[in-house]
Image (tube, rainbow, N blue to C red; front, side):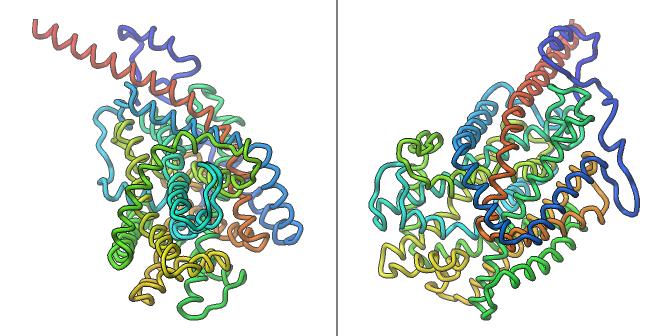
Length: 554
């Protein structure tokens, strides 16, 4: 941990710049010091027992009262999106603005882990893990369905547009970029940066509570810190369950397409059980073996499928739409970022932007801790720009290839084919589109494998993160503990499918994302003060070293 010695020149001035608490060289207590260790478990009692108990209680109530639960999910979603949708819209835009400001300020020069730290993973593996953890099965589920939805029913976000026209197609890709681009990764960048900085530079545990040390000081080890980590665990589990629910619906649709497997909730619950088994095997292997290798396999398979569709599909249309949509996205970003449909009187945003923002926020503890763990040694500027730009550009290219191909078919001589599939069952859209291209059986099989591997990487990396949160920030928690959380993630996803399907998944994301957005707003201030302090320390050290070298030279 880098802090100034009290006798150094300028220490008093630097200390006075911190409004609350700056750590000394030796952190006096850690959450892990109070852990309970027994039979392969090593956990922080309050966080583990309360968060696990609340999740288990939710699962039991949902399974016992499925029909009332389905009605309750719909009512909660309507209440939150109607009354507080504007808050999520504003908050997520502020997170992105804050990240860009930090990246281009003097604070961007701070290195995560100290001035001499080196990156733990090469860039390719780093980006692969970012994408696999940050988006996962969502890329497979929505890359075709979302542009087609917006083509058929254009929102008035950028003006009134006639459905099923070229203008509607252009806007459809732009809005899809908006939902999957910089705003999503701005949320992840904020949480990941905050965690990496306080863990690697200040020596604090890798948990959400540590980010608030400048504001709470030693109280992060008491009940305020426990509450923060319990919220983070709940948010992570339900955010993961949302993605896993989408993934298993699509895997079921693909197997129905290939081998005629029935599309039903019981089948999807069975698939969750099988794939969760794969995830538990991967989670035992740890970060360097299981998660990293699966993430790299994902990148290779996804790249192969994307290149194939690009070459055999409408190549010129895809590349042209990619460039045009990117320009339209950049030009329209300020308007889209703050649009709340207040003057249009529509309710489109509740099912789309508000849902996505809640989903990304609910995923942020998981993705933030995960990318923090793999980002030691990178500067703040490199971290923020890398997390914002690299995954966003790859996501835009993916959406252009698959979404652009579907739009080209709808605007051409296959009108109604893809849109009909989206209307009937959104999970089948990808496979219906692949049916219109050569080598359908092979590409559909690869797509199913991708969905499954995305499922596994999301589940195993999520289990590592939740196990870390519930063990007081320990980077390597025992295997049985990681297995417990991997299984519980699958159980939550199954419960949500049984208790309301798609509506329940969306409600879970929004409900857990909303309170955590408040925590992220406070996090912006906390990490800003921490980076200011760290930059002052580094700058002071450089001046002192230069003065010593000059004195020796003289």
